Image 1: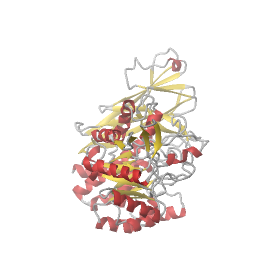
Image 2 (image 1 turned 45 degrees about the vertical axis):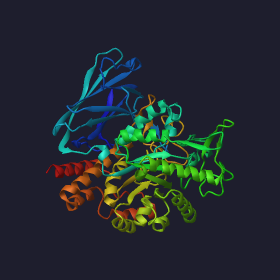
Image 3 (image 1 turned 45 degrees about the horizontal axis):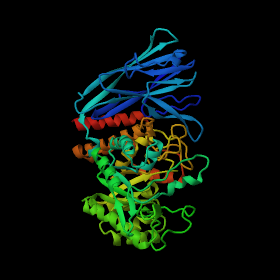
Image 4 (image 1 turned 90 degrees about the vertical axis):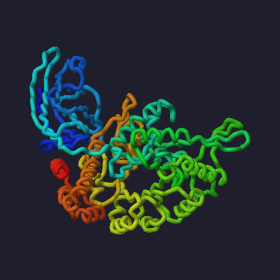
Length: 576
């Protein structure tokens, strides 16, 4: 017997604990044209049961094993296109089971007294008529060979405003997630850089494209992050090594040849899906070093510990470049390739969290000497780097803690250098706002409004598919918080399985776009009062205090209703 039924907002996360947290009331989710909104359905039974989604021909969707138990079929009726997902549960760091992955499957079995969550998403496009759309949620019950009976009927509404939102490729927010293509090949059991690999990659590029991804990650040396030290963790295993997209061979005469075709194929694939325009090159500067992997430097004369693997055609062996001259020639060849293919103006050489000013300056000077047209973008987690290198870089992505400490300087610097790319980022152990499985889903959504609040160009994150060994079974990995290294899951058919965090982040990016559009039409004076309903005007100071004192308070709203109301107000401002 069905003993629990609720309609929950899309920012609700089901957690298996007693008592279960009650969701907010859902009051008319709102969206524009070319947009989406969602809610969740929560069910629970006194007996072992199955939930089946009426997403296909109902005569075809049948689980005989579930026929031996209680079976609940969920149907959602609306004139808008509807997508439904069963939510999967994952063991978090606190050992509680929590919903995250959105499985595109037609049914799920559950134990007695264990709730099931269904994610229901409504889609609009440029042809969708504005108005209020009635929604019916119907639950049918049946037993072993029993006929179905309608046991629950709920009604609510979804509203579409007459505002056409931009396509994701035209979003104004400079949003960047680093891509880990080698890990995608491993998880899907396809050869690296093969046709099969690229077929799978296309699914993940599409998922990035839907977020308005603005950068293409290319890796041009072996394991530039040294596998995130995955070789040191024996409890939560993972293979996080990333390999170069450029293949090198040395002919019988001793001459090196460079094959850029894999890298270019990946760039072209991203561009076809609207990802870009930036090409973010990893593996040339501030390459992470682990003495246990390389007890002695391959080339002490060169300032970076580059691993450049090549095929020696004379003896058929794979080897590494070990001479300063060879490494310099390779780095120049990468630069010249982008120049010769007219892509150099889109290229940023990325440095990830340099830790020593003198070492980084030496590497930076060497790279500029070899490759004068390269632009440098740095992710900074040491505050002193901001002022030290502010006049030498073309892009900044300070860690949130650095942003808070140097905020006034960064804003003034941005005003003086409007063409500098200014992002902020979070990662790993940051308590909030973050995108862990344990964090409130509103923290994924607030990413967009907070970027607008700070006046930055965009937001960056270190990982999209940096999975542990088997992320469908175990989301924890090493010292990372559960879910931190990824926002989607690998599907068994080569697809990218979305998560609740992905969807809420997507809503936050659209919030940013609405704020930006509303400012352009009505002026900032009309937009800020709406923004301050989500993030109070004095929140920057609150953030500074909270980060310094490690307080758990969130100086922004955690209520879905507030975000829905502000979105409606922004859409109405644009409608007017």
